[in-house]
Length: 345
Image (cartoon, rainbow, N blue to C red; front, side, top):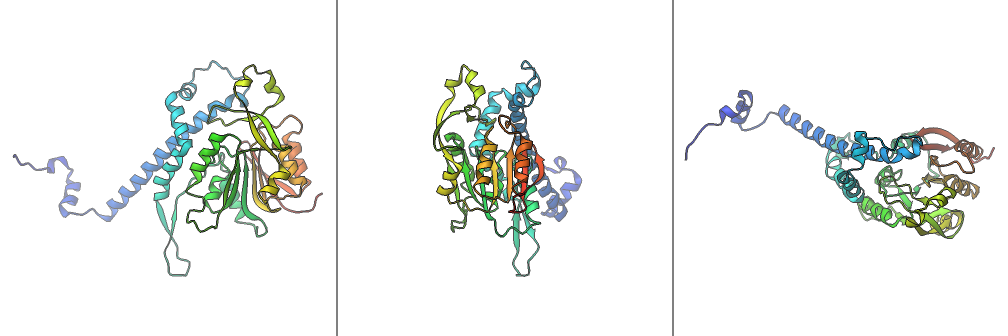
């Protein structure tokens, strides 16, 4: 066998390092940084693809005069079967697995707290639509919220991950109740959250899944099911739907709970951390029931995108102001309000 040197394949500066048998600490540090940055870039790419696709699907609601014959590259990308398959696989556990095998495997050593033990933290990702989770976390860190139970009630939870207002709080150890009428979406939520629901199995955290809608009555209601697992805009049948000739193809019957039945069945405390409502047009009805029954979540996240039929979003915010709530911000489609007092004014 012919022998040859490899020195001509390796630059002189790296050859000197290899001859010594070890890499310098500086080079090791640079390599580690490169790996971390590369992983984060790949992860951001996947989430940006999802965001672009989701944006395309929402444009019909945002811009009624949109040219439906648009041939932009975003439109073509959104119609790609490959992209649809990636998004579906991601919602069904793929994105969570990606986070667990990348971000959550990178750790940082935190300063000692005086106990003499090393503390370790991992990286995370705010999966809420417009940064609602971290916004509220920072807000809560400045307040004393001892009387509010660490519970998030997520009405319209969808897959429990993408644009979720509950996922990160569950990661941080909060109890949660996720309400979603579509079976497939709820099953995805169970898959996405099973690792974070009481991860040490010590009984300190409870996450419950409710296959139903919250409305103003108990029983069953007609529900327009969406076949697109990204736009996630299924909703109770509205008057405008009656003019849709193809309505019967997507119509299903789903269980319905009034707020009174819901809070009684699941033993919801009067004071709890977060009430998140994404009910595609029925949010203000649900809010009125919670508040009129005397429930006071510390924070309300309320999507108003489709709220027009009997009370405008501005009127809902004004109503809540009279019940002790202060408007904090609007993030994306979500209004965020903070409970400040029990005195109705």
